[in-house]
Image 1: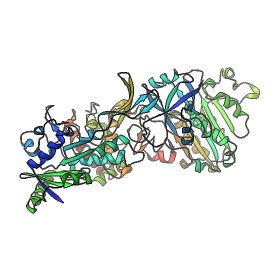
Image 2 (image 1 turned 90 degrees about the horizontal axis):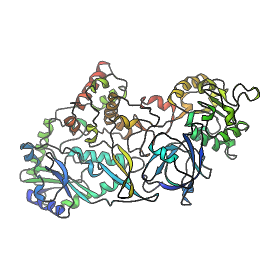
Image 3 (image 1 turned 90 degrees about the vertical axis):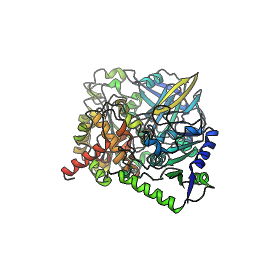
Image 4 (image 1 turned 180 degrees about the vertical axis):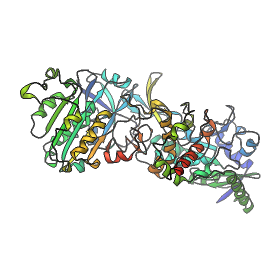
Length: 346
Length: 293
């Protein structure tokens, strides 16, 4: 069932979570939209569409994956040599993530939890967070969710999807957690539904890029030895920004630290774009140059996770396109790979 | 395994053995601090585990002991911060253990077949576990010939010297030892290549060269191969020459890894993770994967 939340109603709903100290939303404190704990509901940008008109970015700089897979976290502490659980995982509500990030959450959940031995911390974090997504009515130039199987109004991976219409939001529960949240709101009218559908069609119309994912997979199946990787990465500075800001990148390093006399084991995001990432203890390194490392990233998004889990792991959020200091564009990489395969008659 | 897969179990170092002339390889025999955990800790040779030191870190190592041995054995080369810290630990110290992880050697396929082991350098660890496991009286009838070619740079660099000497005279296996240079072998109880009677105690030569002299019916056998990339490169053609098909050759890989459960990303070879899909791979499968290892 679709319900309608007037702007004031949504504000009231969010204010409850603010009061409990557990609402996170995009805030402008750092000069761009970054995630932070909201201390007053007035900080929350309810209408992202209006904010965009005022020059605000379409999406947060940092992906919403930080709520299930934070930049760094303590896995456990030591008491002598015994490992002991630490750090109660808090219940959070996240407002304002985009459908691309929702889709990425679904991927991460599948990768970390539904794929062999589970990662208990990611599972617990996902269980304890409520994800209230907001659909995109005005995607950015660098967005391409529809080219990789998603959409600006998609609800996958979210608990609730909100779609902005005149005077408020159309609310759609995706999970039972979402249903609970939306209980008591009036049913949306047919006109409101039609308006949302029209906005969705308009948004989709601005997302022009099409990628034949099957052809791309076939091209990559045979593309490991291609000279194209060298050419695509001539400008790469090995900064790793594309991976750190990617909503589906999941790599981490594990390390020990001692804080105020307590020893603990922690993990921190790592990146396959770094030389040391793949260096063996013997010194041997299978991915010595940026070409080999970038190839691993592109292959992972469009081939390896397809082989592994049957799905592409690029959600088309466009962050890597926007943040790369060298202007490397994954859409260009994909186009070049397809072009090369076509030329070779593959 | 159960519980949190990142948390190690406490184990006590019962025995430390310096294994080689360069003194950078030590074996650690470990006992679980909490009785009962040993029974739950079931594994097969080929699998690996992480050793952990609180406040220092952890790293993965192949399990060098056989499933029925009381103590767990790990042989560790001193190369970085963690292994240096481990090398400094003495008998009685408590460290952490987590695992077992990964795939084992193809024990089902090996049933009733001859087993050829080819190993170079300190990769011999999990293959020691294979040998001890097969030599166990109850297990021995389940396998055909056990042929082992094991080489190192010098005789002093060979691991498990006492066992090697015992195996030399054990009719249950055929052991060929070799070294790039055999000079000085007698210091370690081995006879060099030029000493008449015991001529074959440690032959001089590289593993692939020595392997050429081994007679084995390939179609009845399985080959387990472990060693540095350069040895592997020259060993594959010899095995092919001997009649081994890629489906009959198994290798154990050692990519950098952090988690052991296919999450941290580091050890991927294309869409496979060495920690989860390996470390033991069939050569036939490796040929289909990108050369990313």
